[in-house]
Length: 267
Image 1: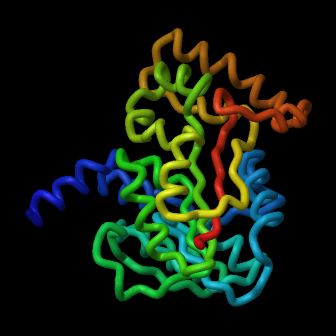
Image 2: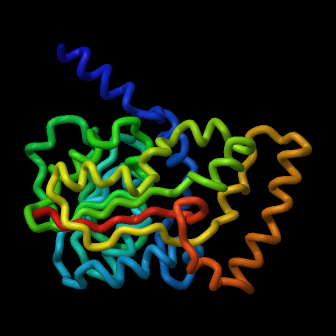
């Protein structure tokens, strides 16, 4: 029975450990999100954080799957939170430690699989994951572990890129393998209601943000002429809505917005 349970967890993952090990091996340090250098979508994310999260030094925050700690560095510097991270990638954990050492910031890193027994870990004032839950086919099982690590009365922050709508249509052509690593159902806000009700989460903020993001189309797995023309088409669009028509990013929908972000309080 234990073996079947472990197999079930592995089948729940849409990515393999080697994928993340290879990715973090190549990461450049220091890696952090900053207001002055963040891309347009990240700036919108930071605006939500600045508005809805408590500015109180010493609060404990845990980022799940957070290597190498881009957002944690922001919270450690700007909010003066006490930062922790948990990741099952050994390389990712090491890079996170190196990243914070480079910036002279303190951090506790847990090299653990979140589907393991976490009863020995502390509970945190804030639990955060950004671009994590969409890599699992069973949304409920992964969110449950987030809630488990959140203190009663604490805050849960969930963020996922939104690859539905227009973006899904284009990525199906340009990067079908990349798209297959993501659970598109996790990007539908309506599907979040089930775990909100199941775990008694009070919604503080929940919305699609960031507007349309052509940066999603910079990668191409199959460089056919047609695919190259599609990428070429979106290049001037990216320049226009980043530099000249930034106000367009204020218009958001499941059909084109770059990101879905939710902030919840655990009752």
